[in-house]
Image (cartoon, rainbow, N blue to C red; front, side):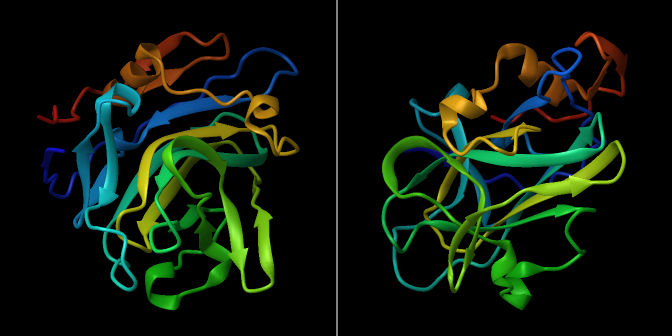
Length: 224
């Protein structure tokens, strides 16, 4: 498996949001490696079975200890106020490689979970040695519970996926207003399409009919 280290990427906000029609669920698909900011030792790596052949992780063999350094941030435009759920396309080999820290502002406080260790923000990733979907949860000391986030208004939000354990792999994310679904088929989860990637790379605003309305500038550097 080959990889190339991606240093700090600070880019213009990525405005994505695809309402699918009146009364329909809001659904946004994102490539992990196209995050607006990736901080080492979180890196982009290559794997042919991953979406578009790439994923992110803190490189390392599953082992006790380690982790808690590096993160990826996504600037996501929420087109409507309300409740949202998140799903991740992941690989988690065992109990030593099955967690991230997740905060989504402004619904969550501006807190560095890697420093505080607040279990409200601990995502216990479903284990599996192949890519699979897992809804992002609270892994609390008393059990694991599905998370949902409530936003009082539409607009820009900041999602941080931070390393907790090295070797936990993240391929893609799926944002949905369907917070009731706990199974991937019911949530209609999907990997990003070429159109999703184009929106994510170019920073396009999307109008209510799902058509690209405004170009905010294609400043994202091509990764090699």
